[in-house]
Amino acid sequence: MITKRITALRKPRFEYDRVEAVLPEHRSVSTPGEVTLYLEVATPEPAIYKGLLTSEKGEKVKTGQKISLSGDSGQYVVSTVTGAVSSISIHTGDFDKSYIAISIRAEGEEVFDEQFEKFALNPTLDTARDFLSCAPGKPPLHASFGSEKSIQTIVVCGVDSDIFISTNRYGVTTQFNAIKKGIHILKTITGVDNIILAVPQDVMHGYTGIDALVKAVPIRYPATLPKMMMQNLLGQVVPVGKNVEDLGVSFFSAEAVASIGIAFKGGRIPVSKRLTLIGKDGGTTLLSVRIGTPLRDIFEASNIILNEKDRIVLGGPMRGAAIYSEDHTVLSDTDAIMVQDKNNLPYVSDDPCINCGECVRICPAKIQVNMLVRYIEAGHYEESADQYDLHSCIECGLCSFVCVAKIPVFQHIRLAKFELSRMDTAEANHA
Ligand code: SF4
Ligand code: SF4
Image (cartoon, rainbow, N blue to C red; front, top):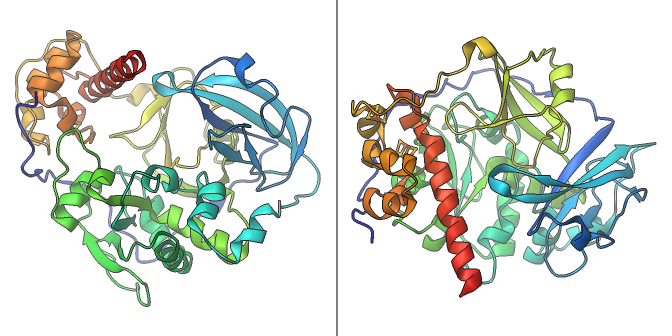
């Protein structure tokens, strides 16, 4: 039972930096000696997948070549270098997700796979789904355009989903022609006429000749999150337990749309990803790196020295997730990497809530966060959803940021959602 429905989201204010008049050049990180790509699978059992990959250890692959599992799972990765498969192993990611980690050692002169080129002249949704699902920006072609979805609106996000990140804000300007092409193709292959380009409010000029309605998004956090944009741009509130696709809306990052434009225009799947590197001093740099590049290579190229107990975060300060190894690689939707010095880590504690109410006042979803966190900490996940609106949370992270007792509220919320989804899956499997 849901006790409270969101009627409208509040508007807390955390301003982004204004976009500079002179756009910063992104810096390209050299192609690494080895990339590692992650193919999501259902079970962490190597024996199940043995011999089923289209490219096995020792086999040669070209840049842009698909590697998939035999069968009809539809999952694949795209090699971002030319070389040979050097290792295949099982990797466990966040929240117990299982992946086949496929490492490819770069060798010899770069050669591009030509399979996609044959289809690029006549763009179709099937071609886009079959080749571009792990292109830079990770176009949600499967999630949004699966058979049961009925999408009527596409929102192209020229804004970023965390503070300090400028990957899409700058991308919407510097990759404008590719985005324009990508929007045109998206319209053609999906049949969706209503396309909105969401751009930062401080840069509302220069979007001429684009086949989309341009709308301004306030440059304050969390106005840039999809559920906030649903309300502010489309006047729709996502009901509890539903997602934006259930309301017929699909969100693409500006980079994902640029990837579609670049791929169909040139006949090659793009393999380099733009991201914002946030250094220990909070300074940011825009980088272009091959998907699959180990973070170690990026730090080396950026003169970042990691010391023991420094923290690496994939994402930004509000919503990012800490990772524990420099061997982790850049994914197709990694928009930011943040490095925090061990002496400046945000303090977290297991002190009890002092009921100050700061989290309640800042929560854009108007959740009684102080009560929610009590239930979650006690492991009462179902009650936290039924009585304190866990599923209304839009995952902005502001509650953690303001918590006086330094309780990692947001992390508790994510864990609770994960545990509930695991229980739902287990129940469905035994039904
Ligand atoms: S993360 Fe915290 S502040 Fe943000 S919506 Fe969820 S409960 Fe509210
Ligand atoms: S901000 Fe922290 S201490 Fe204050 S009410 Fe919320 S959870 Fe409790």
